[in-house]
Length: 82
Image 1 (cartoon, helix red, strand yellow):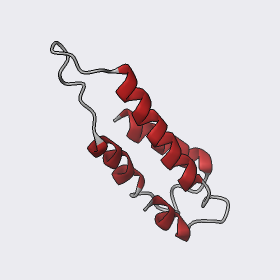
Image 2: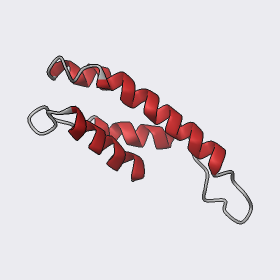
Image 3: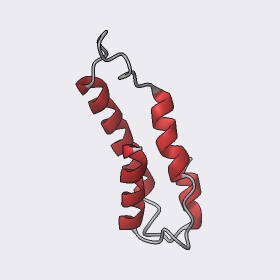
C-alpha cells in the first residue's frame, strides 16, 4: 500500500517504500522479542494491528509536504513511537 501511495511522488522517493516496510517489520520483531508479556505487564501485547497503525499514519503523506527521504523517515519514526 505504501508503494502504491509513493507512485505519485518523485522517482527518488519511490524506493523508500520497501525500506519503510522492512524497517517496520524488523522493529515489530524486536519489540516482540524485548517486551515479552508477563502477568505483571500484560499491557505489553503487540500484534499486527500495531503495524497497521504505523502504515495508517504513513499513508497520510502528501507529496507537497513530504518531499524528501529525510522527511518521510522522520514521519516513520514519529508513527513508530506513537
